[in-house]
Amino acid sequence: MECRVAERGRIVLAMMLAVATAWAGVLLSVPPASAQPVRPIPTFARDVAPIFFTHCTTCHRPGQIAPMSLLTYKDARPWSRSIRARVAARTMPPWFADDGHRPLAGDRRLNDNELMTILAWVDGGAVEGNPADLPREPAHAQDDWQIGTADAVFELPDEYPIPASGPVAVQYFEVPTNFTEDKWVQAIEVRPGDQARVHKVLLYHRDSPLGAGANPDDESAPPGRALTFYASGADPLVFADGMAARLPAGSVLVFEVHYTTNGSIGRDRTRLGLRFARQPPALAIQALSIRNTGLVIPPGESNHRVRASVKFDEPVSLVSVVPHAHRRGRSYQYRLLHDDGRAETILSVSRYNWLWESAYRFAEPVAVPARTTIEVTAVFDNSAANKANPDPRRAVTWGWDPATHEMMLSFVVLATPRSP
Ligand code: HEC
Image (tube, rainbow, N blue to C red; front, side, top):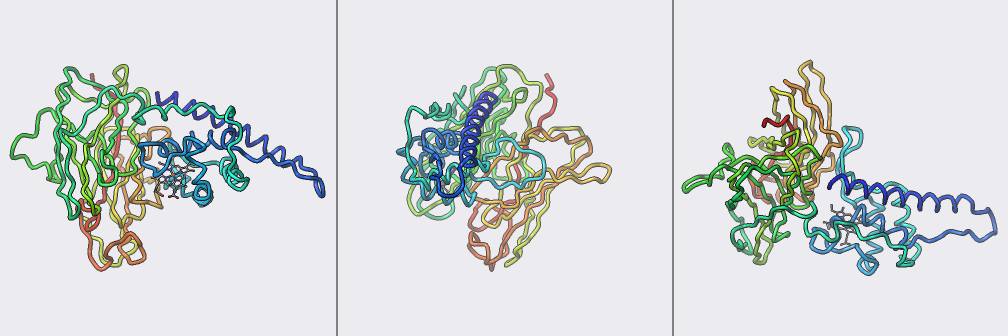
Protein backbone atom coordinates (compact mmCIF):
# COMPACT_ATOMS: atom_id res chain seq x y z
CA MET A 1 0.00 0.00 0.00
CA GLU A 2 2.66 2.40 1.10
CA CYS A 3 4.75 1.43 -1.91
CA ARG A 4 1.93 2.06 -4.29
CA VAL A 5 1.34 5.51 -2.86
CA ALA A 6 5.02 6.32 -3.14
CA GLU A 7 5.07 5.14 -6.73
CA ARG A 8 2.11 7.24 -7.61
CA GLY A 9 3.85 10.21 -5.98
CA ARG A 10 6.87 9.59 -8.13
CA ILE A 11 4.85 9.46 -11.34
CA VAL A 12 3.07 12.68 -10.48
CA LEU A 13 6.40 14.24 -9.61
CA ALA A 14 7.89 13.11 -12.92
CA MET A 15 4.95 14.66 -14.76
CA MET A 16 5.37 17.86 -12.87
CA LEU A 17 9.07 18.04 -13.55
CA ALA A 18 8.33 17.55 -17.23
CA VAL A 19 5.89 20.46 -17.11
CA ALA A 20 8.31 22.65 -15.21
CA THR A 21 11.15 21.79 -17.57
CA ALA A 22 9.05 22.59 -20.59
CA TRP A 23 8.22 25.89 -19.01
CA ALA A 24 11.86 26.68 -18.29
CA GLY A 25 12.64 25.77 -21.88
CA VAL A 26 10.18 28.35 -23.10
CA LEU A 27 11.75 30.95 -20.85
CA LEU A 28 15.21 30.20 -22.16
CA SER A 29 14.11 30.43 -25.76
CA VAL A 30 12.54 33.86 -25.28
CA PRO A 31 14.24 36.16 -27.77
CA PRO A 32 15.91 39.19 -26.19
CA ALA A 33 14.84 42.84 -26.50
CA SER A 34 11.60 44.01 -28.01
CA ALA A 35 9.84 40.75 -28.91
CA GLN A 36 6.91 39.81 -26.61
CA PRO A 37 8.09 37.08 -24.26
CA VAL A 38 6.01 33.93 -24.56
CA ARG A 39 5.56 32.78 -21.00
CA PRO A 40 2.76 30.35 -20.36
CA ILE A 41 1.17 31.15 -17.04
CA PRO A 42 0.81 28.04 -14.88
CA THR A 43 -2.78 26.94 -14.37
CA PHE A 44 -4.35 25.18 -11.41
CA ALA A 45 -5.57 22.22 -13.44
CA ARG A 46 -2.39 21.48 -15.35
CA ASP A 47 0.46 22.66 -13.12
CA VAL A 48 -0.61 23.33 -9.55
CA ALA A 49 -3.10 20.56 -8.72
CA PRO A 50 -0.45 17.82 -9.17
CA ILE A 51 1.80 19.64 -6.69
CA PHE A 52 -0.98 20.12 -4.15
CA PHE A 53 -2.07 16.48 -4.47
CA THR A 54 1.47 15.31 -3.70
CA HIS A 55 2.55 17.84 -1.07
CA CYS A 56 -0.52 19.41 0.53
CA THR A 57 -3.79 17.47 0.43
CA THR A 58 -2.82 14.76 2.91
CA CYS A 59 -3.52 17.53 5.45
CA HIS A 60 -5.45 20.08 3.35
CA ARG A 61 -8.71 18.22 2.72
CA PRO A 62 -11.97 17.95 4.62
CA GLY A 63 -11.72 16.32 8.03
CA GLN A 64 -7.92 16.60 8.33
CA ILE A 65 -5.78 18.88 10.47
CA ALA A 66 -5.29 21.83 8.12
CA PRO A 67 -7.78 24.72 8.27
CA MET A 68 -8.81 24.58 4.60
CA SER A 69 -9.00 22.14 1.71
CA LEU A 70 -6.76 22.52 -1.34
CA LEU A 71 -8.35 19.68 -3.32
CA THR A 72 -10.22 21.79 -5.86
CA TYR A 73 -9.74 25.11 -7.61
CA LYS A 74 -12.75 26.51 -5.77
CA ASP A 75 -11.21 25.47 -2.44
CA ALA A 76 -7.76 26.84 -3.22
CA ARG A 77 -8.47 30.08 -5.10
CA PRO A 78 -9.43 32.24 -2.07
CA TRP A 79 -6.18 31.25 -0.33
CA SER A 80 -3.79 32.07 -3.16
CA ARG A 81 -2.12 35.07 -1.48
CA SER A 82 -1.62 33.17 1.74
CA ILE A 83 -0.35 30.14 -0.22
CA ARG A 84 2.20 32.34 -1.96
CA ALA A 85 3.43 33.75 1.34
CA ARG A 86 3.66 30.38 3.08
CA VAL A 87 5.39 28.43 0.31
CA ALA A 88 7.81 31.31 -0.42
CA ALA A 89 8.76 31.41 3.28
CA ARG A 90 8.97 27.58 3.19
CA THR A 91 6.74 27.32 6.25
CA MET A 92 4.38 25.14 4.16
CA PRO A 93 4.60 22.22 3.76
CA PRO A 94 5.82 21.95 7.35
CA TRP A 95 9.26 20.35 7.73
CA PHE A 96 11.62 20.76 10.65
CA ALA A 97 14.54 18.36 10.15
CA ASP A 98 17.98 19.51 9.03
CA ASP A 99 19.67 18.18 5.93
CA GLY A 100 22.97 16.37 6.06
CA HIS A 101 22.16 13.38 8.27
CA ARG A 102 20.48 10.05 7.49
CA PRO A 103 17.97 10.44 4.61
CA LEU A 104 14.34 10.51 5.72
CA ALA A 105 11.28 9.02 4.08
CA GLY A 106 8.25 11.15 3.26
CA ASP A 107 10.08 14.44 2.85
CA ARG A 108 7.19 16.83 2.20
CA ARG A 109 9.24 19.79 0.97
CA LEU A 110 8.78 21.39 -2.45
CA ASN A 111 11.67 21.41 -4.87
CA ASP A 112 12.62 24.69 -6.57
CA ASN A 113 10.61 23.96 -9.72
CA GLU A 114 7.47 23.23 -7.72
CA LEU A 115 7.95 26.34 -5.65
CA MET A 116 8.45 28.56 -8.71
CA THR A 117 5.39 27.04 -10.39
CA ILE A 118 3.17 27.94 -7.42
CA LEU A 119 4.55 31.49 -7.21
CA ALA A 120 4.09 32.03 -10.96
CA TRP A 121 0.54 30.66 -10.72
CA VAL A 122 -0.41 33.17 -8.01
CA ASP A 123 1.40 36.05 -9.72
CA GLY A 124 -0.34 35.16 -12.99
CA GLY A 125 -3.77 35.63 -11.40
CA ALA A 126 -4.29 32.13 -9.92
CA VAL A 127 -6.19 30.94 -12.98
CA GLU A 128 -8.05 27.66 -13.21
CA GLY A 129 -7.06 26.56 -16.71
CA ASN A 130 -8.75 23.70 -18.48
CA PRO A 131 -10.43 21.27 -16.06
CA ALA A 132 -9.65 18.49 -18.56
CA ASP A 133 -5.99 18.88 -17.56
CA LEU A 134 -6.69 17.94 -13.93
CA PRO A 135 -4.91 14.83 -12.70
CA ARG A 136 -7.02 12.20 -10.99
CA GLU A 137 -7.85 13.00 -7.36
CA PRO A 138 -5.24 11.45 -5.09
CA ALA A 139 -6.24 8.12 -3.54
CA HIS A 140 -6.08 9.64 -0.06
CA ALA A 141 -8.94 12.03 -0.94
CA GLN A 142 -11.41 9.15 -0.83
CA ASP A 143 -10.20 7.55 2.36
CA ASP A 144 -11.40 8.50 5.77
CA TRP A 145 -8.10 7.14 7.08
CA GLN A 146 -4.71 8.31 5.88
CA ILE A 147 -3.46 4.70 6.15
CA GLY A 148 -5.99 3.57 3.51
CA THR A 149 -8.85 1.23 4.36
CA ALA A 150 -8.59 0.23 8.00
CA ASP A 151 -8.94 -3.51 8.78
CA ALA A 152 -10.01 -2.80 12.36
CA VAL A 153 -11.34 0.33 14.02
CA PHE A 154 -11.59 0.96 17.77
CA GLU A 155 -12.91 3.95 19.67
CA LEU A 156 -13.24 5.23 23.23
CA PRO A 157 -16.07 3.43 25.05
CA ASP A 158 -18.00 6.72 25.41
CA GLU A 159 -17.78 10.36 24.51
CA TYR A 160 -15.55 12.10 27.00
CA PRO A 161 -16.76 15.58 28.09
CA ILE A 162 -13.92 18.13 28.22
CA PRO A 163 -14.51 21.09 30.54
CA ALA A 164 -14.07 24.66 29.31
CA SER A 165 -11.13 25.48 31.55
CA GLY A 166 -8.56 24.20 34.02
CA PRO A 167 -6.21 21.30 33.64
CA VAL A 168 -7.81 17.90 32.98
CA ALA A 169 -6.16 14.89 34.61
CA VAL A 170 -4.68 12.33 32.21
CA GLN A 171 -7.46 9.93 31.21
CA TYR A 172 -7.17 6.18 30.62
CA PHE A 173 -9.66 4.26 28.50
CA GLU A 174 -9.53 0.50 28.06
CA VAL A 175 -10.87 -1.13 24.93
CA PRO A 176 -10.80 -4.91 24.41
CA THR A 177 -9.73 -6.02 20.92
CA ASN A 178 -11.51 -9.38 21.19
CA PHE A 179 -8.94 -10.73 18.74
CA THR A 180 -9.01 -14.52 18.71
CA GLU A 181 -5.60 -14.76 17.02
CA ASP A 182 -2.40 -12.71 16.95
CA LYS A 183 -2.49 -9.84 14.46
CA TRP A 184 0.45 -8.20 12.71
CA VAL A 185 -0.17 -4.47 12.44
CA GLN A 186 1.42 -2.64 9.52
CA ALA A 187 -0.20 0.80 9.88
CA ILE A 188 -1.63 2.63 12.88
CA GLU A 189 -3.60 5.87 12.85
CA VAL A 190 -5.07 7.74 15.79
CA ARG A 191 -7.90 10.13 14.93
CA PRO A 192 -8.89 12.44 17.75
CA GLY A 193 -12.60 13.18 18.00
CA ASP A 194 -11.80 16.72 19.13
CA GLN A 195 -8.75 17.93 17.21
CA ALA A 196 -8.46 21.15 19.16
CA ARG A 197 -8.49 19.64 22.65
CA VAL A 198 -6.73 16.29 22.26
CA HIS A 199 -3.12 17.20 22.95
CA LYS A 200 -1.65 13.73 23.04
CA VAL A 201 -2.59 10.06 22.92
CA LEU A 202 -0.26 7.30 24.06
CA LEU A 203 -1.59 3.96 22.99
CA TYR A 204 -0.61 0.78 24.81
CA HIS A 205 -1.63 -2.86 24.65
CA ARG A 206 -1.83 -5.36 27.51
CA ASP A 207 -2.62 -9.03 27.84
CA SER A 208 -5.30 -8.43 30.46
CA PRO A 209 -7.38 -5.50 31.70
CA LEU A 210 -5.75 -3.07 34.12
CA GLY A 211 -8.03 -4.06 36.96
CA ALA A 212 -9.43 -1.97 39.76
CA GLY A 213 -6.98 -0.06 41.91
CA ALA A 214 -4.25 0.01 39.29
CA ASN A 215 -2.46 3.31 38.92
CA PRO A 216 -1.58 3.69 35.29
CA ASP A 217 -0.35 7.23 35.86
CA ASP A 218 2.94 5.97 37.23
CA GLU A 219 5.85 7.16 35.13
CA SER A 220 8.02 4.21 36.06
CA ALA A 221 5.42 1.61 35.04
CA PRO A 222 3.59 2.34 31.80
CA PRO A 223 0.15 0.73 31.59
CA GLY A 224 1.22 -1.69 28.85
CA ARG A 225 3.49 -2.13 25.86
CA ALA A 226 3.65 0.97 23.67
CA LEU A 227 1.92 0.71 20.31
CA THR A 228 1.81 4.27 19.06
CA PHE A 229 2.05 7.88 20.03
CA TYR A 230 -0.15 10.67 18.73
CA ALA A 231 0.15 14.38 19.35
CA SER A 232 -1.45 17.23 17.45
CA GLY A 233 -0.08 17.32 13.91
CA ALA A 234 1.28 13.76 14.07
CA ASP A 235 1.50 11.46 11.10
CA PRO A 236 0.13 7.94 11.19
CA LEU A 237 2.66 5.19 11.82
CA VAL A 238 3.18 3.15 8.66
CA PHE A 239 5.79 0.39 8.49
CA ALA A 240 7.53 -0.74 5.30
CA ASP A 241 6.65 -4.14 3.88
CA GLY A 242 8.23 -6.90 5.90
CA MET A 243 7.83 -5.06 9.21
CA ALA A 244 4.85 -5.13 11.54
CA ALA A 245 3.92 -4.96 15.21
CA ARG A 246 2.44 -7.99 16.94
CA LEU A 247 -0.88 -7.49 18.71
CA PRO A 248 -1.48 -10.74 20.59
CA ALA A 249 -4.86 -12.49 20.68
CA GLY A 250 -7.05 -11.15 23.46
CA SER A 251 -5.10 -7.88 23.80
CA VAL A 252 -6.65 -4.97 25.59
CA LEU A 253 -5.88 -1.50 24.23
CA VAL A 254 -5.21 1.34 26.66
CA PHE A 255 -5.75 4.86 25.34
CA GLU A 256 -3.89 7.36 27.50
CA VAL A 257 -5.35 10.73 26.49
CA HIS A 258 -4.06 14.16 27.49
CA TYR A 259 -6.66 16.88 27.01
CA THR A 260 -6.14 20.63 26.91
CA THR A 261 -8.89 23.16 27.55
CA ASN A 262 -9.58 26.22 25.42
CA GLY A 263 -12.43 28.24 26.88
CA SER A 264 -15.40 26.22 25.65
CA ILE A 265 -16.74 22.76 26.40
CA GLY A 266 -15.74 19.93 24.07
CA ARG A 267 -16.56 16.27 23.50
CA ASP A 268 -14.10 13.66 22.37
CA ARG A 269 -14.35 10.14 21.11
CA THR A 270 -10.91 9.34 19.77
CA ARG A 271 -10.67 6.51 17.24
CA LEU A 272 -7.91 4.13 16.22
CA GLY A 273 -7.56 2.58 12.76
CA LEU A 274 -5.31 -0.43 12.14
CA ARG A 275 -4.21 -1.99 8.89
CA PHE A 276 -2.85 -5.54 9.10
CA ALA A 277 0.09 -7.08 7.24
CA ARG A 278 -0.99 -9.74 4.76
CA GLN A 279 1.54 -12.20 6.16
CA PRO A 280 3.74 -12.47 9.22
CA PRO A 281 6.69 -10.10 8.70
CA ALA A 282 10.41 -10.85 8.79
CA LEU A 283 10.94 -8.06 11.32
CA ALA A 284 8.89 -7.36 14.43
CA ILE A 285 8.32 -3.79 15.48
CA GLN A 286 8.91 -2.70 19.05
CA ALA A 287 8.18 0.75 20.35
CA LEU A 288 9.64 2.42 23.38
CA SER A 289 10.00 5.90 24.72
CA ILE A 290 13.34 7.42 25.63
CA ARG A 291 12.73 10.06 28.27
CA ASN A 292 14.32 12.11 30.98
CA THR A 293 11.75 12.74 33.68
CA GLY A 294 14.28 14.48 35.95
CA LEU A 295 14.55 17.64 33.88
CA VAL A 296 14.73 21.01 35.63
CA ILE A 297 14.86 23.98 33.27
CA PRO A 298 16.06 27.12 35.08
CA PRO A 299 14.07 30.35 34.66
CA GLY A 300 15.14 32.56 31.76
CA GLU A 301 17.52 29.92 30.35
CA SER A 302 17.41 29.97 26.54
CA ASN A 303 19.67 27.04 25.75
CA HIS A 304 19.11 24.35 28.36
CA ARG A 305 20.27 20.89 27.30
CA VAL A 306 18.64 17.67 28.53
CA ARG A 307 19.99 14.22 27.62
CA ALA A 308 18.57 10.72 27.68
CA SER A 309 19.94 7.53 26.23
CA VAL A 310 19.38 3.82 25.82
CA LYS A 311 22.08 1.19 25.23
CA PHE A 312 21.28 -1.94 23.29
CA ASP A 313 22.87 -5.32 24.05
CA GLU A 314 21.51 -6.91 20.88
CA PRO A 315 21.57 -5.36 17.41
CA VAL A 316 18.37 -3.52 16.42
CA SER A 317 17.21 -1.38 13.51
CA LEU A 318 15.92 2.10 14.20
CA VAL A 319 12.84 2.76 12.04
CA SER A 320 11.50 6.13 13.20
CA VAL A 321 11.34 8.63 16.02
CA VAL A 322 8.85 11.24 17.20
CA PRO A 323 10.41 13.96 19.34
CA HIS A 324 8.03 15.38 21.93
CA ALA A 325 8.32 18.50 24.08
CA HIS A 326 6.02 21.32 25.11
CA ARG A 327 6.12 25.08 24.68
CA ARG A 328 9.79 25.45 25.59
CA GLY A 329 11.07 22.76 23.22
CA ARG A 330 13.64 24.20 20.84
CA SER A 331 15.55 21.37 19.17
CA TYR A 332 16.16 17.63 19.24
CA GLN A 333 19.22 15.70 18.19
CA TYR A 334 19.79 11.94 17.91
CA ARG A 335 23.23 10.34 17.92
CA LEU A 336 24.60 6.82 17.79
CA LEU A 337 27.47 6.32 20.24
CA HIS A 338 29.42 3.28 19.12
CA ASP A 339 31.37 0.87 21.27
CA ASP A 340 34.69 2.12 19.82
CA GLY A 341 34.00 5.75 20.72
CA ARG A 342 32.72 6.94 17.35
CA ALA A 343 29.65 9.19 17.44
CA GLU A 344 27.28 9.83 14.52
CA THR A 345 24.42 12.31 14.36
CA ILE A 346 21.59 10.51 12.60
CA LEU A 347 18.83 13.11 12.94
CA SER A 348 18.76 16.76 13.90
CA VAL A 349 15.52 18.71 14.25
CA SER A 350 16.88 22.15 14.92
CA ARG A 351 13.59 23.97 14.47
CA TYR A 352 11.45 21.86 16.77
CA ASN A 353 7.89 23.19 16.87
CA TRP A 354 5.68 21.92 19.66
CA LEU A 355 2.54 22.26 17.53
CA TRP A 356 3.89 19.77 15.00
CA GLU A 357 4.55 16.28 16.27
CA SER A 358 6.19 15.03 13.13
CA ALA A 359 7.31 11.43 12.89
CA TYR A 360 10.75 11.15 11.31
CA ARG A 361 11.05 7.89 9.45
CA PHE A 362 14.43 6.92 8.07
CA ALA A 363 14.52 6.11 4.36
CA GLU A 364 16.48 3.00 5.35
CA PRO A 365 16.22 1.70 8.92
CA VAL A 366 19.38 2.69 10.81
CA ALA A 367 21.48 -0.29 11.94
CA VAL A 368 22.24 -0.06 15.65
CA PRO A 369 24.89 -2.72 16.38
CA ALA A 370 25.08 -4.50 19.74
CA ARG A 371 26.50 -2.36 22.57
CA THR A 372 25.57 0.88 20.78
CA THR A 373 23.81 3.72 22.55
CA ILE A 374 21.09 5.92 21.08
CA GLU A 375 21.62 9.29 22.69
CA VAL A 376 18.93 11.96 22.55
CA THR A 377 19.62 15.62 23.31
CA ALA A 378 16.81 18.14 23.64
CA VAL A 379 17.32 21.87 24.02
CA PHE A 380 14.74 23.99 25.86
CA ASP A 381 14.19 27.74 25.73
CA ASN A 382 12.68 29.02 28.97
CA SER A 383 13.51 32.65 28.20
CA ALA A 384 11.22 35.59 27.45
CA ALA A 385 12.47 35.55 23.84
CA ASN A 386 10.49 32.31 23.30
CA LYS A 387 7.03 33.62 22.36
CA ALA A 388 5.36 30.32 23.22
CA ASN A 389 6.70 30.45 26.78
CA PRO A 390 3.89 31.35 29.22
CA ASP A 391 6.19 32.22 32.16
CA PRO A 392 9.97 32.68 31.85
CA ARG A 393 10.31 33.42 35.57
CA ARG A 394 9.57 29.87 36.64
CA ALA A 395 11.79 26.79 36.74
CA VAL A 396 10.09 24.04 34.77
CA THR A 397 9.98 20.34 35.63
CA TRP A 398 8.48 17.18 34.11
CA GLY A 399 4.73 16.99 33.74
CA TRP A 400 2.00 16.42 31.21
CA ASP A 401 0.36 19.87 31.23
CA PRO A 402 1.95 21.81 28.34
CA ALA A 403 1.20 25.17 29.95
CA THR A 404 3.08 24.56 33.18
CA HIS A 405 5.38 21.58 32.66
CA GLU A 406 7.72 20.07 30.10
CA MET A 407 8.46 16.71 28.62
CA MET A 408 11.67 15.35 27.19
CA LEU A 409 10.38 12.28 25.46
CA SER A 410 10.99 10.53 22.16
CA PHE A 411 8.75 7.80 20.88
CA VAL A 412 11.12 5.38 19.17
CA VAL A 413 10.24 2.54 16.80
CA LEU A 414 12.69 -0.36 16.45
CA ALA A 415 12.70 -3.53 14.39
CA THR A 416 14.24 -6.87 15.35
CA PRO A 417 14.06 -10.30 13.68
CA ARG A 418 10.70 -11.88 14.46
CA SER A 419 10.65 -14.77 16.87
CA PRO A 420 7.94 -17.21 15.75
C1 HEC B 1 1.39 17.90 7.45
C2 HEC B 1 0.20 18.64 7.17
C3 HEC B 1 0.25 19.78 6.18
C4 HEC B 1 0.80 19.78 4.93
C5 HEC B 1 1.48 18.62 4.20
C6 HEC B 1 0.58 21.10 4.39
N1 HEC B 1 -0.08 21.88 5.30
FE1 HEC B 1 -0.59 23.84 5.08
N2 HEC B 1 -1.31 23.88 6.99
C7 HEC B 1 -1.40 22.80 7.82
C8 HEC B 1 -1.94 23.23 9.11
C9 HEC B 1 -2.23 22.34 10.31
C10 HEC B 1 -2.15 24.62 9.03
C11 HEC B 1 -2.67 25.56 10.13
C12 HEC B 1 -1.57 25.94 11.07
C13 HEC B 1 -0.65 26.93 10.47
O1 HEC B 1 -1.12 27.94 9.92
O2 HEC B 1 0.57 26.71 10.51
C14 HEC B 1 -1.74 24.99 7.68
C15 HEC B 1 -1.78 26.30 7.19
C16 HEC B 1 -1.56 26.63 5.86
C17 HEC B 1 -1.75 27.96 5.31
C18 HEC B 1 -2.19 29.18 6.09
C19 HEC B 1 -3.67 29.35 5.98
C20 HEC B 1 -4.10 30.69 6.55
O3 HEC B 1 -4.68 30.69 7.62
O4 HEC B 1 -3.79 31.71 5.92
C21 HEC B 1 -1.45 27.87 3.98
C22 HEC B 1 -1.54 28.98 2.97
C23 HEC B 1 -1.07 26.51 3.71
N3 HEC B 1 -1.13 25.78 4.87
C24 HEC B 1 -0.70 26.04 2.47
C25 HEC B 1 -0.14 24.77 2.24
C26 HEC B 1 0.34 24.33 0.97
C27 HEC B 1 0.29 25.14 -0.32
C28 HEC B 1 0.83 23.07 1.16
C29 HEC B 1 1.51 22.20 0.14
C30 HEC B 1 2.48 22.80 -0.74
C31 HEC B 1 0.63 22.72 2.55
N4 HEC B 1 0.03 23.78 3.18
C32 HEC B 1 0.99 21.50 3.14
C33 HEC B 1 -1.01 21.50 7.53
C34 HEC B 1 -0.34 21.12 6.39
